[in-house]
Amino acid sequence: MSVNNTTPAAMSIDVEDWFQVQNLGIDPSLWDTHERRVEGNVTRMLELMEMHNVKCTCFILGWIAERHPDIVKDIANAGHEIASHGYNHELIYEISTDRFRKDIRDTKSLLEDLTGHQVVGYRAPCFSITDEAIDILQEEGYTYDSSSFPTIAHDRYGKLSGLQPNEVVQEIREGFHEVCVSCLHVLGKGIPWAGGGYFRLFPYPLFKAGVNKILKKKQPYVFYIHPWEIDAGQPRVQGMGKQYTFRHYLNIDKCDERWGRLLGDFNWTTVADLKDQVLNGTV
Image (tube, rainbow, N blue to C red; front, side):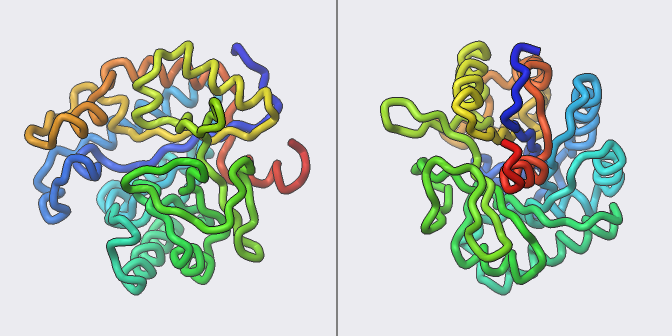
């Protein structure tokens, strides 16, 4: 362990399969025709986290939970937090409010039925959160969202009004909190430093140094990863363009080893626990 970080760092996994990634452009009506690899990948991730005594938050797609209920139960039985990633991995701003409400209601109910635990956390597919979605989440019994990069512009990311750029946990409605995904501020600009393609892009020592810098400033840190990112053997999709091909497959053969190092190099907790530590003033 290189850092005995007392400032909390949250580990999170967005549980979806390789063919559900937005960049690949595979129609949801065809998902059931593709090889499912999520079960083996999640099992591997659970083994790595057990090895390093890490507890995380798993934001799980309802589509996955319905077809692989044992995955959800295994995650819960290992002591990890179960949270919602919606059902069909649809961008929020591209669907109706009624459809969004049904999506998050059905997923919450399914996950709670499978685990016997209340589900209170949510992360939007591709971080496509909106102000209206926050209102609906609260109405449906969620108490926090973790979908916002406050200082980052991206072609798919949503935007919440009124967020403070340097506060990780913020009360955005009475009793409802946003737990922002982490950025590293360099020369006044925010660089995504929370996982995904950026974790695979930068050499591990550089990424680790950035996490150290954030934590040494007493800023809580939130990391995310997907099961398909540790799967070098996943099918290769052709014809999705150079940019998306680069984003998706970059250093995917190294990610299993890198993530294992990251698990061992810092102290990790769940997103809900990070939020509670901040709100209780223990940070």
